[in-house]
Length: 105
Image (cartoon, rainbow, N blue to C red; front, top):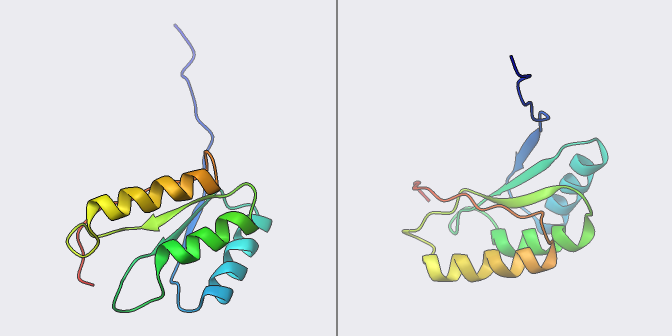
């Protein structure tokens, strides 16, 4: 009988980008206390721009994985979202993620 392959448990947290400086500080705190993943909500009508906030967070953090939670292809064109995600990946190589789904914003 072979041993089961296990993966480490990872922990994440999500934030609302109400103010970019506040969002950055919360992401830095999340990284400092050991979270592995940080998601930032995307809503063009309720919050600040998710990719602007993620970009700032990418250059001011070093380990934590970053990405939007969750972009809506009905309100954010898929080609624009793909370009933004690719740019974020260049800013934080190997630390980006992308969540896509529908929502109400």
